[in-house]
Length: 285
Image 1 (tube, rainbow, N blue to C red):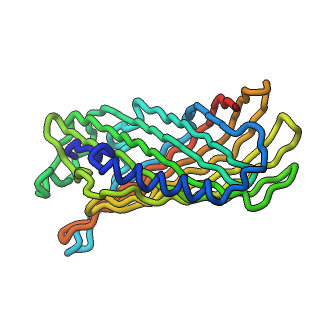
Image 2 (tube, helix red, strand yellow):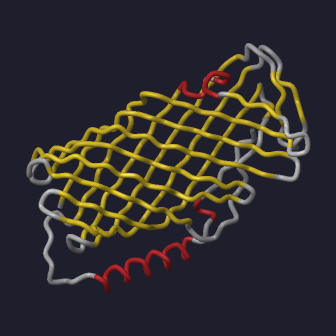
Image 3 (cartoon, one colour):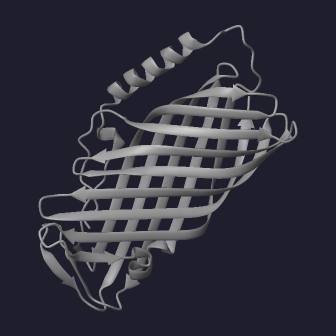
C-alpha cells in the first residue's frame, strides 16, 4: 500500500478558523455572563496501555463479488510498535455551556516475514502475488484534531448529562511495503476543504467532592475522496482530584476506525479497533 498522507495542512486553514470563530461567537451569545463557574479551564494529557488490538483488511472484486480478507495483526505483525496519545479538555463559560477540544494520535507499525503467500493489488490496481518469505513493513498512523461545543442539559450537585457537536480535521497514513514493492490501496490526498462533523455525549457522577466517575463517547464522520467511514471513541473512567488544580484519571478506553474505499472495480474495507487502559493527568484553572 503506497504511503500517502491525508494532510490537514492541505485543508484551507482560513476556512477552518472562520467556522471555528462562528462557533465560538454563537456560544458566547448564548451564555449568561452573570453565572460564575469554578475551574473554567481543563487540560488532560495521557495515553493508552494497550490491552487488545484487532484489525481487518478486506478486498472485494465488485464484478465477481469475491475477495480476500486478512488480519494485518497476524499476517503482518502490525502491532510491533504502537502508541495511543490523547489530549483533551474544555473551557466553561458557565455550568451549562463549554467549548471542548481534543487531539487523538495513534501510531502502529510492524515487520514480518510472510509464512503464506496471498494475492493483493499493487499501486496501479493490478493483482500481484506476495510470495512466502517476503519481508513486510506495515504502518498505520492517524491524528484527529477536534473543537466543539458542549451543552450540559442536566446538571445537579451529583450528576451531569451533556451532549455536544463540533468539527474535526484528520490526517491518515496507511502503509504496506513488501520488500520494496508498495502494495494495497493507498489513502490518497484529501480534497475536502472544510472540517467534518463530530457528535459527543457524556455522563459524569460526582461520588465525593474529589472523586468522580464518567462515561464519554464521540463519533467522527470521515470522508476522503473515494474513502468514507467513521471514527468512534468511548471511555469509562474515574478521576480523583488530589489537589485543587490537579487530578489523576484511570479508565477503560476503546476507539474504532472504519474506512471503505469503493471504485468501479473493487471495494476495500479497513476496520481497526484498539482497547486499552487510559492513564492521564488533568489540570484545572
